[in-house]
Length: 143
Image 1 (cartoon, helix red, strand yellow):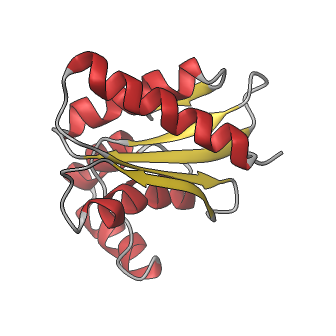
Image 2: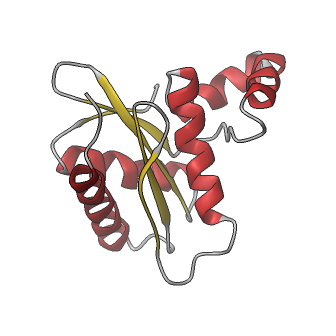
């Protein structure tokens, strides 16, 4: 199963509602399907030029390695050579900090990933988790 466009848009809608609820800084959100293709992407007014690429890198790293970007961050601390090699294999697109969250269906199947950036990495992850959950899916941060 793969995320449908309407589902990806719903995740973005709920993620940006979480941003507003918590008064986080403006965010960019990228939703990828299970194969790593972009299903939907939005950037709020006030985000910088690089934010969509960072959001993509968080989601892409998570889906490419199969663990949330928080887990990638933790792994980078103990095995930086692994993250460096994985990033090289991803042509530099992997961003190993919190805010890249895997999306699973209620049976635990991996169906996509969400990358969020704009505030602190922890706050980015909070918005992603709330958006995924509110859209009816299971968020997997890798924690």
